[in-house]
Picture 1 (tube, rainbow, N blue to C red):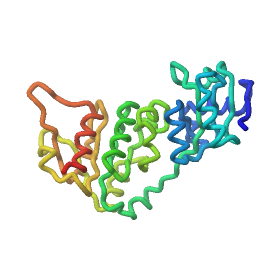
Picture 2 (cartoon, one colour):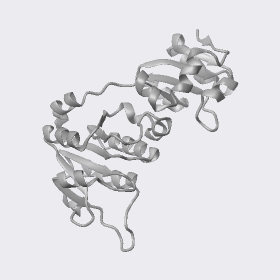
Picture 3 (cartoon, helix red, strand yellow):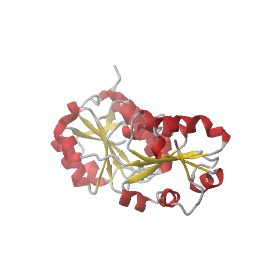
Picture 4 (cartoon, rainbow, N blue to C red):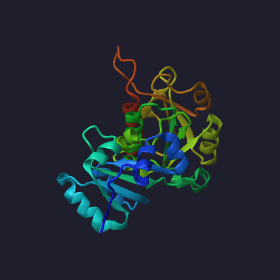
Length: 263
């Protein structure tokens, strides 16, 4: 039987509010999910959930019943007024979950080889929507993992998680502090560092991007850093019509990533 919370002084209510801040998420090793879709995904994928808060509103009755059947000891029913306090969704998500962050080991990942399936390297991607889309696309295109340089948006923020559509648990995500760490991981895994270069790159469909590639996607404003450009093994470009200078980072990433599955 699910339990009830009535006061905004409750420790779980306070914790959910604090988990909206990256500093607290990093310290506690926890993050928030919101909405029926992500909560359902969490239950189906057996994510390590600490607890769920679900509104007592009539529109959430089906989800309350599902949670009560699946994890009654971790389900807390709260008044709608409290859900509005803890929810980040403009229209009111109706349900919030507190999930423990997965632990990904980059050294183990590198040594495993993962069959030399491609990896995605993110050079300080800032836009949460772009980041979420890239995570989702990388998982869909069969990429083995994602390596993000420090300065990339927090993959465990609510905005990013909504954009991933739950795919964050389908693909390992590693954060590193320096470009040297990126290169070290790429070299040890036997992959080639692939960058986009509109001046010296070959058309992407003329390069072999099916296996063994570590594809770098650069910052939305500054592009790929000079350090990573200098380390590149392969340079590619996406041909464009006259007068078009560039594509959105998420779209460019999707075009290049899907070379891995093109027949």
